[in-house]
Length: 470
Image 1 (cartoon, one colour):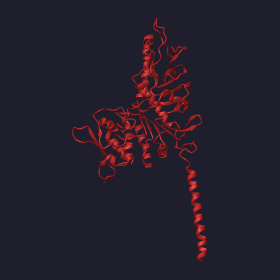
Image 2: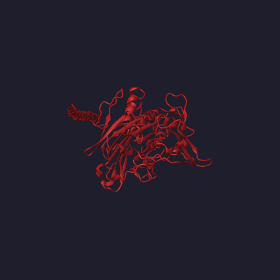
Image 3: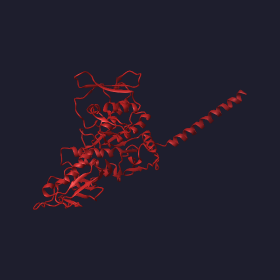
Image 4: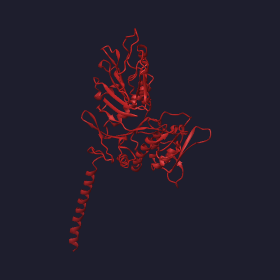
């Protein structure tokens, strides 16, 4: 699980500061406050890690990727090419990671990893981006761990390995500098050729690549419902950034069983999705079936109430089709992965919006194959109802306050600002920003004043009429 994130000089963010990320992390804020770009930044790192081009330092995206952030110049705060993009990620691996020094036999067992990097334009000019430096800090409960960094040691851009707590031993006759890193995080192949104990350090880069591979992103603009869906047996990585692969994901997970917290038995995947659509208050029943035997075309049929007829999904409210990818992705994601969702509450009634909080809580606590799934959610939202339900569950002790992190983003002069909201044991937010969800008290006061004024005006009209009648 990702436990910390810090970004500097990225789009509207001069410096986010180190953000604590919890199992459920929610970003609120005004329009154009930079909250969407936080998840998009992480997706950019994933796109880069999965790109076949190992020399491309960052992959901002194109028409084939979930996010397209333009050029590297577009990424920099105020498009200032003299600035460098700095970022850091902290995470806890699903299992302790062991790094063995083959020369000394020492084994470092780590439960916490911090990665940081600096990326800028080569020679300070807008030609191509280069990785200025990167560093891994590896620590565990029983030892202090070590740090490994790659950084140039001269103006020519030749890189050296810099270590603390781990001694990199050169092979005789191979004292040459290292070439530049692969992408923004990888050691070059020459590391194992130049260092006797260098090969094992690649496990750190693999750990980061695995973390980024476990990210999924669901944007706010989701596909409209269809009368027929095609599935040829593939197992998609996720439901897609527009939710276009939700049915493929659902059918690919047919053999999986998920057990909800507090229940003794697991539920088949399709039954689980149907149960949550009902729990959210959207429908009574849900079923997927092939159009005809031997065809790869499938039809989704739903009943809004027990007494209503079974209809195709386009014939019910738009909200059902928009929330389906959210529900499927919440349980389809692999254990220990991170799900980023923008505005899951779109097109949903307030009562359904608040129930979404219970969906994410249930997904965080769910178990599969006898183990905790430990799925993490990073949510961008505008829904007060969603937040209020989270607060209530903390007060009811259904959710530990440490398992929630809430942030408020706001545009300020020169960029964006982010404020952590402090939630106490009883679900109260003790530092509400001014105008967090609009100025409700002013609206209520003005409504009351308008009512009083209108009653006085009405009374003034009635008074002369009464005197005339007398």
